[in-house]
Image (cartoon, rainbow, N blue to C red; front, side):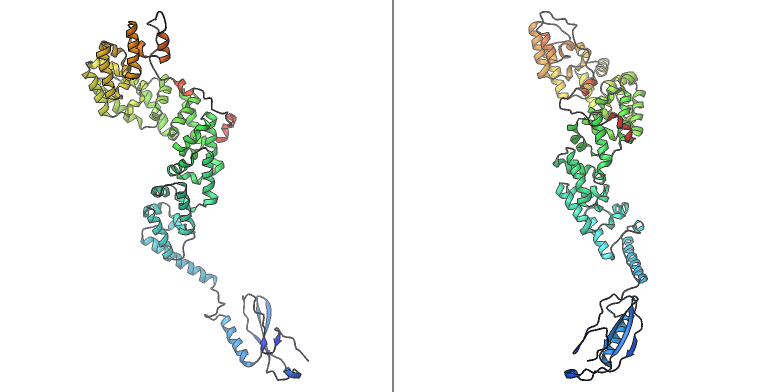
Length: 524
């Protein structure tokens, strides 16, 4: 049996051809004729003309054979379609055709966005849906979240987020943490970039870090609602350095969680630019560093007062309104909010009010500010009511002015309590009004807890004393005096005033700081 070499394996009625390589370039077929093949034996029938044609694909030559002329024609027809016929299953659009199609799709998406008022200029280069229908789905979903066209124009890159792949997973995660759906709108307005985040890679590690700062699980959603930008911070960046610095100046470790819960903005503050300059400025005013730490524990929002924009101008205003420089630390420590207010207009307004109702002068107004800086935040009506009450009690205008300058708290006390104290004073103590002018702080003491029990003890002993001696001391000191055989009526504590040391009382539960004072320059 004589066999000529072929590109396929020939069996009775079957011809296998290799056709599994990629088609890149198709050349015209070469047709050659082979001599007739005779196979002796049972397979001695004549096989018609065997035709071989070759074509080159990607610089490689393949051969195919057809058994007869009809098969050759079919192969030729198929080959013609492969060469570029539009109905070929193997056809591929050219790069230019693909590019033109992408441009056309984007143009249709842009046309849709412009039609609803969205400016797509910033979307160039961003991967967008290929159809306007998918883009409409994204816009509708954002509308359901409460975002307006204006909100989207403020951050148009949000349109690059897929509803199913980005938006829904992120919002579901926030909901599971406890972030209220009613806050989603404001949340996304403040930090729309969250929709680009990965729950596992970006969001979960930040939440875990916050929990490590002793923020209670129930407080985590409130922190995120107040300061959603925290979800975009790096763990080893601003967050860790700001916390380390606060601990370093004396903020108790066990208070850090509460501080961050009440004012999470601290996590985004740079130490060298914001926190450290603020702390050092207060120290420069005369407030000890540990006292500053205690103020931050109680009112962490003071760190958000702009040092140049508010704090320094407000300090200058206080000096301008006759607050003595030596008492500035006391004023700020009593009422830290005073350095964050739009202060000068309030000072002008309150000075004018007090001048009109009790004829108070600029110097006396300075003394009022030193003793009760909260006076700048009092509204007109309560001030006038308290002044009228004192006048009804029988005090002259001059006496009222003296009392207010001596104890400005009279302008803010509960009027019902003041009436009870005054009634007891008149009916039981039977002392002259001048004693109250000398010691107007009488109205600030509790009637049942302090005034009545002490007055009864003194009356029982038949002692005559001033109101200041009777009331301006601690319970321990008063009880000690009552055990003396002889009592020096001059022995009494000085007039009550704010004591800075109360902010710096040692705490037995505080641990030593790991913060290195020498490393402060690292934050600059």
